[in-house]
Length: 392
Image 1: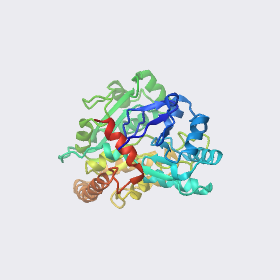
Image 2 (image 1 turned 120 degrees about the vertical axis):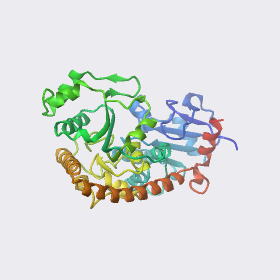
Image 3 (image 1 turned 120 degrees about the horizontal axis):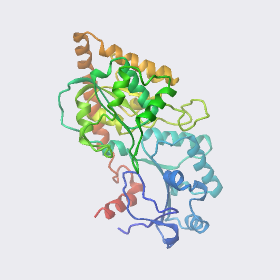
Image 4 (image 1 turned 90 degrees about the vertical axis):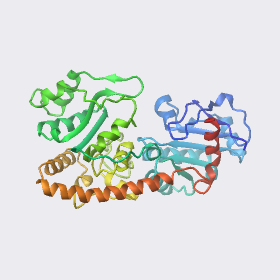
């Protein structure tokens, strides 16, 4: 099979499961048949290449005239929102792009439906979409093991709101029931380490006294590690920690749904929920979970075929859009569970485990359907073939 040449303005490699290692800058374009023009969200975020000028005029002309060419736009990033949908619609209309040769790759079915619905509202129907499920693909399923704690909570990338969560767990003496990690670093690219003074200032901004005990003593012990390399998000130690607890408190990448919209009021129509490996690790470990995330996260999980724990765990927090109130609801439920009578707790965990086993099987089924095969995604065979070729 003759493999296509892939070109983008930046020549950046994608961040998805494709792992393509041969994307060429546009200046090397040979304008041959079966050319793929590629644009990804990181071209914008890191290189300030806007979608409307992601190709040169001669490349757009080649794409329009040669029906064997493709335009591929990939956004498997947590910044995916209605703004990107609007920009794509504008590009399609301004350039009068043929929809049958425009392909959009997203992270999951939630984002694919968000994209299709958003484009449909703008009068664009019939675009090619495909999902990577990259967090599901990359998440391992470990061997079962017995738990030793009630809760697990893992935090690798420092965020002030994550520190606020841990501060509340410490001050309420709930942390004793946790196996956990907490780092004062930003682990991406060049690792940035934040001082304890920086952490104290962040706590003060949240109205939390960093000199109050037991928090003051706990802060002196930061970072709390799992004896694992912090730059490996799928490290075996993370799975072991999750399995050491009955329940996983999943601290997702975002808690404030307005983190990217900033000035806009909360609206589920602005941005879909973005589920990362943090969520799927708990499911792969067959552990029940509580989500410390944006509102609607449990609803998103359910839409993918998984069950949650309503009736056993109070999940009303998922519908609370006020960040402080949602935080209080999560903490309150952790407090209730930690202080349950022993027999009631054991009975609750047993019922939760049966749901967790269902979710594990659903995860295995979904993971088995994520291969890019002819029956699943015939229009992407060229991309899958390119991936295989570059991995030889």
